[in-house]
Length: 112
Image (cartoon, rainbow, N blue to C red):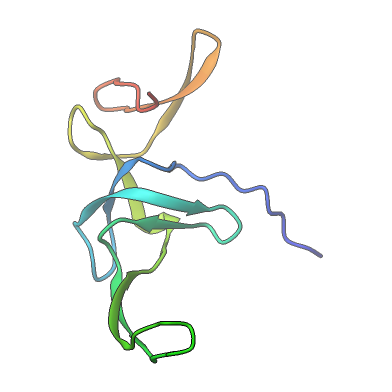
């Protein structure tokens, strides 16, 4: 039986998130990319690894050690409310006929 690929995540591109588990626990950053198929998010400045790259003179690539950001599982991050500056689980409400994400602690709308 094939897996369903229409997953939904609680984070969107541009959200400010806090890492809640793993080696980068407590770090904050903005979401740069969301992969719905794998259920991962790419957060700016979090989960940075050093990768050795071999030189390729034909392509003009210089070798060396490069720091790149790897994606995190979406369950390891929580959305940070901009007004109360806390990690929150998002709450969904319908306002003006539109479904929006809301902070349950302060009631502020997370979608701009």
